[in-house]
Length: 376
Image (cartoon, rainbow, N blue to C red):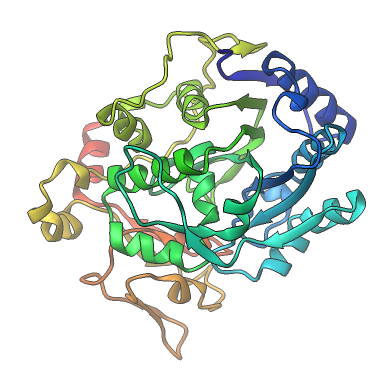
C-alpha cells in the first residue's frame, strides 16, 4: 500500500492548491479511488475558533475548497462540518472563510451536533464514546487537519483533528475525565480515529503554527501538503519532519504500547525526501506527569507541571477561559482578574487554547525549569 504522500505547495493561490492537491492524491489513485457517485462526504477541517485564515488556527479555506471540488468531480456530495468548543458555529464558519467556500460551491456547511454513540473499533481502550451523528451517518469522511503545535499534546495533526467530532462541551468533559494523562488522552484520540476510519486525511501544512498552539502560537510557513489513508502514519512522519522526538509525542507512545505503529521504515512518497527536517521548529516541551504513578497525581500537579496564569496586560476580560474550564477552576472577578483554584485545575490548558488574545501564559513546573536551567 502506498504510504503517506508529502509534496511541496508554495502558497494558498486557488489554482495552485487545486493543482498540487490533485498531484498529491495521484499516487493514492486520485480522489475517485476513495469516493463513489452519490456518497455524502463529510469534509472535517479544523475549525477551532472564530479566527481568520492568516492566524493559522484553522484549516485554510482554499484547502477545503480544493478537496470539495475533487469530491464533486468524483460525483460525491460534500458537506463541511466541525464542532467548535466555545465560539458559535456560525461565527466560526464566517470568520474562517468556510461559509464563503460553501456558498460558492453550493454545498452544505453544518455544525457537528446531535451526539450519538460511536461503534468502537476492535481493541479500543474506550468503549463508550459519543460523536456527532453527522459524522457517523456520512458515507465517507475526508479529514482536513491543520499542521499545528499543541501545548498539551505537543502536536495536533490528523488523528487529533477527529476529536472535533465530539460535540461541543463534551470535549471539555473528556479533558476533565482524562486530566493530564496525555497517553490516555491519546488513546481516546486513536480510538475515535480508528472507529470513524476516515477515507482520507489531507494535511494543510502550507502555513502552520509553532509555539503555544493550538490557538495562540505563531504562524510559520512549511510549504507542504500531505495525504494518507492512515492519519497515524501521516502524523508520525510529520512529527519526525518537524524535528521532534517521537518518544516525546504522546500519540507515538500510545500507538507503540498498543502495537499500532505503522511501518515508518517505508519512505513517504512525494517531493520531500524522507530524511527532510525543518530546522528550529518551536515545539512545546511537555511536563512529565506521565512519568509518575497515578497515586502521585496531586503531587505531580503541584510541583511538576506548568500552571496557567493570567496576563493582565493582554487580557480583554471576555471570560472564555472561565467558560471552557472543565474543572470549574477559573472565575472572572468583577475587577477583571481571573482567579484560579490550582487544587481543582487539571492542567488541560483548555483556557490557553480558547483565549483569543494569548492572555493565558504558563508558570513552568519544576521539571521544565530544572531541565532548562541544566540545558537538557
